[in-house]
Length: 156
Image 1: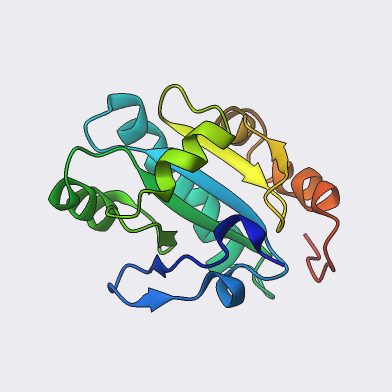
Image 2 (image 1 turned 30 degrees about the vertical axis):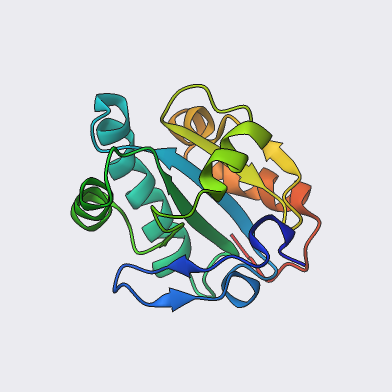
């Protein structure tokens, strides 16, 4: 059902390969287009970390939310350094995967940072995730969840 990353392999922060079918099933997915060389990205990433931590790591049960980082870094080393130093405990598309170009086209990414919130099938809920988190904090997750049309176990 997680069509947006079907047939791809994602990474976690330990460098382990992750099957997106399992990791993203029945979740709202935030595709985070970002890069370490970009000051607005470095400004927003800690805010996104706090949002993710509160929703996923500190909620019981964890919110049905996952982030996939899609790097616009200039090299794999730059991506790995930025991912490890600043990002939350979410997933990433490997830097070497050219699918990032297709994703950028699909969601009309012309600049970073951009947080695109999608349903399991890849349909966009909003491409203004960054603005909504800044303006509304955790409250925006409820509207994403309602729009995602997935089975909900979230009580927040």
